[in-house]
Amino acid sequence: GVSMVDSGMDEGDILIVDRAIDPYNNCKAVCFIDGEYTVKRIEIGEGTVRLMPANEQNTKYKPIVVTEENSFLVWGVVTYVIKKM
Image (cartoon, rainbow, N blue to C red; front, side, top):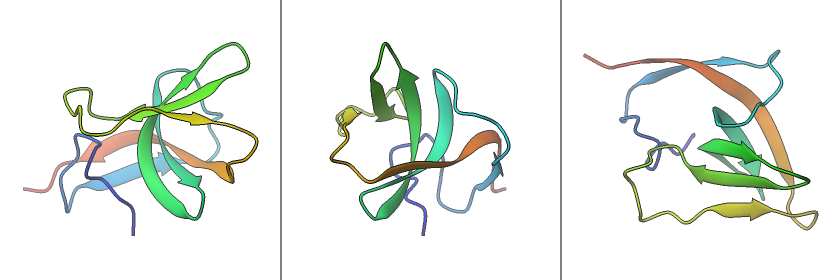
């Protein structure tokens, strides 16, 4: 399952994910890193990619700097969040 604990999204919310969009700076995306799926905000810098908590208020999760050692894939860019009623 997709972990949404740190993404400002609640259990049961539906994500609309577009796999045709290339990841861009500050987008929220479903990422596959080291064997698990997670929803993160992606910061793309000069030769660096950092995965940030998608929910800025959440300080429990630290940024993840993606290196060549990581098995990393952006599965798709989140375009909409449909809130559970």
